Image (cartoon, rainbow, N blue to C red; front, side):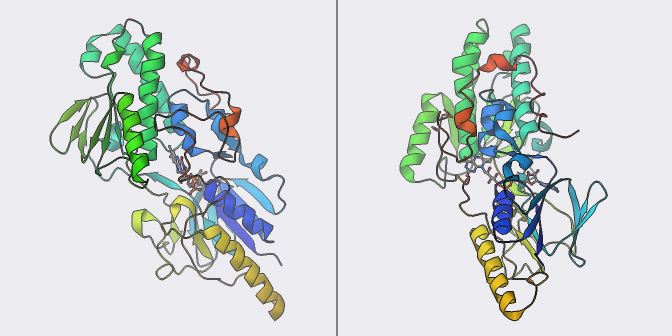
Length: 393
Ligand SMILES: Cc1cc2nc3c(=O)[nH]c(=O)nc-3n(C[C@H](O)[C@H](O)[C@H](O)COP(=O)(O)OP(=O)(O)OC[C@H]3O[C@@H](n4cnc5c(N)ncnc54)[C@H](O)[C@@H]3O)c2cc1C
């Protein structure tokens, strides 16, 4: 009998795991609370109105329909019973599994900084991107009517986190202000709109090689982004961001790109957690039949190839032994999805300033297909329709 694998999460990690495991003969149920795969790396383009939500959302069923062995289930996983090997769903359903893959991604971490939860804009999903886009537009419209808001920093944006998301976001915002909004609001002093990028480390883009870090910094400065390295945020209010040295930045918009933690998933007994709430190493994670992958894991080992190998190995072994490969734990391993076809870390198809390459180098086709920037004008009516186009309501 084929082992039944439940994969929770249809992101990069979950999709890669589901495909490989189904290819290796497992029967896979892919569970996600939304019925589309979101291409997160281009969220900042939606937030700055360069792309529409539908450009970066693909229906999960459309992604996997050609591959036999994968069933998609739209549901929120609200719990896992590790003892009876069963997943509890928000709609009251239950799914039994032989093996469970947890690939629920990550959520923003505010590190307990006062005011972040209330006032900051995270950038993790389409709703976040649209909320930021609408907030920016409303702020500019309001400032156009009431100029006193400009003095209070209404046009300025603080981006916290000098990693790829923060750098792209800051560059794209600066371009949006200079190239689009300055024309759309001719009487508004858009040149007073500051974009400040705050990074705790000594340089932006810490994981990248030095020449790239230097290049990114040059590009940001060329776009008038104020880069504050070596600083953390102490406190956030509705109209200001206070840095650790006491400096107060007047800004109505704070984009929080400073950190993530594993998306929580309640389990009984509780799944052990490690760094940033992800699954810890094999030594400490001993949950039979359970694995984590993608951003919900913490180890850097490529899991999908390992999973494929271990299933093949178990199939061969059980064929030799004349038993079913299901129900036996092949060892628990927490790791990242490895280089799936759409895994792109280290290969950014656009400049630090956020310009998107016209041809899609991501392997998914979305960036290349979407025909370039649509400009800010397309957001003048609130965009929400296409954001929900893929959703079942
Ligand atoms: C703005 C931004 C830009 C980025 N840019 C890049 C980049 O350029 N290059 C790069 O390599 N990486 C980039 N990343 C990181 C990359 O997008 C993530 O590492 C990757 O998406 C993680 O994939 P994942 O499968 O672990 O999780 P996700 O893609 O987050 O998928 C998790 C899935 O699990 C589902 N889910 C969660 N909880 C539940 C539940 N309880 N029940 C059911 N379903 C659930 C969610 O709906 C989601 O579909 C970026 C991330 C962001 C936010």
